[in-house]
Amino acid sequence: MLEEIEDRGGPRQALLDIKGLKKHFPVSGGMLGKKQVVRAVDGVDFGVAKGETLGIVGESGCGKSTTARLLMHLIAPDAGSIVYDGTPIGRDLSLRELRRRMQMVFQDSYASLNPRLTIEDSIAFGPKVHGVPDAKARELARDLLGRVGLKPETFANRYPHELSGGQRQRVNIARALALKPRIVILDEAVSALDKSVEAQVLNLLIDLKRDFGLTYIFISHDLNVVRYVSDRVLVMYLGEVVEIGPVDEMWTNPRHPYTAALLASMPTLDPDRRTTQAPLAGDPPNPIDPPPGCRFHTRCPHAEPVCASTRPSLADAAPNHAVACLMHAANSGHSKAGTMLEAS
Ligand SMILES: Nc1ncnc2c1ncn2[C@@H]1O[C@H](COP(=O)(O)OP(=O)(O)OP(=O)(O)O)[C@@H](O)[C@H]1O
Ligand code: SF4
Ligand SMILES: [Mg+2]
Image 1 (cartoon, protein in one colour):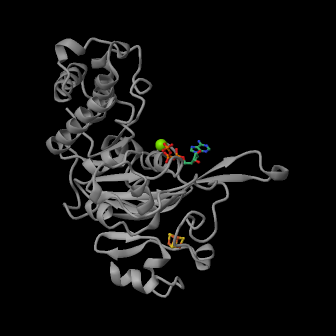
Image 2 (image 1 turned 180 degrees about the vertical axis):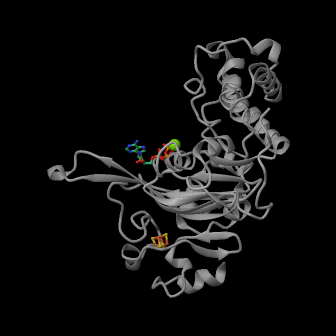
Image 3 (image 1 turned 120 degrees about the vertical axis):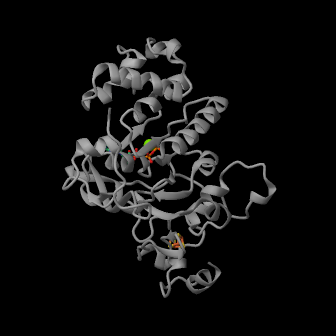
């Protein structure tokens, strides 16, 4: 059987510590054949605490999936470091070991499963690759099927096409858990499901997290779902982190104008949640040539000339809550700098 993965640094040490993470994708077709890059992830810093669910939100194309793929080492970063429980990945921790500790579940439940393998074989595959004998791996697969709410006697010998989308996503979750990981990255993992099935799978994820002592990174465009599952939320805009903090605080008192606009554009029936903030208009600018200074200045209702020339860095706005906005930076030159600091 796979041995338990040890908790090295104790509960207070971050499970993941990410610094300066960068990924630029080269694209062709620039003027006069000039080389261009999409700044998909452009210098991202954040930590993930043991046992938490960190939600990641932001408009389409802001770099959420690229960040997830970088964490999984499915693609190589151009710059930056990822430290896992005190151990730098690549130097002291092999990719093979990392992939046991960190698993990912994607949106497309069908594409993630091999159509020619039975459900049991699919789940047993990973443990077998890691040296678990066939009989033990099958026993584990059947046990996990039960844990994700699929009766093994009914589902073990079925093929992916014989399952519904919700059932397939349960299989993908079982498959992710088969290597006893500590972190599961869920990239729009429930987004393709009907609302009622989505709620069931979300509750299953919450139960599994408790039972297996997991840590989640939960990526979704659905802010209601993110609020339901997350302890903290990270907001991305054009490849950068603009705000990160506890979910309740972010929802009641978002510090960054982009976070406020995202929340304001959310459909809500709750009169207390209706804000006077202008909802987000238009599309994000092109990530090949992002605006200088604060990347949000072309859409920000609080933008001032300084915002077009000075790039705000992520700084503490409250305990455990950081924001990248010149209104929250002392002496930044923004007229509201002092007032926002006092207010927060
Ligand atoms: N392999 C690639 N080659 C070129 N550009 C890419 C590649 N992968 C992603 N991109 C670009 O990088 C940017 C970030 O993409 P990413 O998929 O990370 O966004 P996302 O936040 O996950 O969006 P969505 O909410 O639509 O899933 C986008 O502009 C995207 O077009
Ligand atoms: S730095 Fe300026 S443009 Fe950027 S979010 Fe803050 S106020 Fe808006
Ligand atoms: Mg994505």
